[in-house]
Image: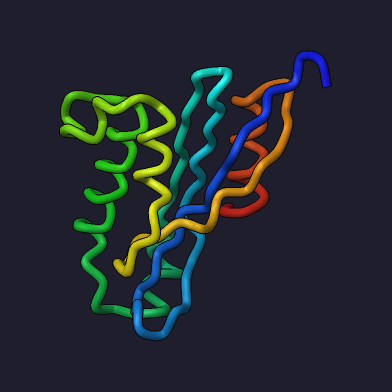
Length: 127
């Protein structure tokens, strides 16, 4: 496995009605401790989300996902959590929640190019 990076990824899910436990995949977070890498990609499919529920506050949803992104990249605008080291940020982002934005359990993998891998997973699981 020379030249390959061990990574973990989680799928970001939007649950329009948490009590129904139905979700739409909205993004990916990919993390590699050894490579000191974390990256998040997301896209809100507003048409699909509205088909589940017209009561969703799409602006708030977008704002929340942007805060996830700020935490992921370690931006000062992301608050205290964004200042944690990369593994702690990933664990915080993927912690179990009962809100309308949740993540899957982390899944492992190996890749030579982490940027290509996150793009591939995003295409396969979100788009």
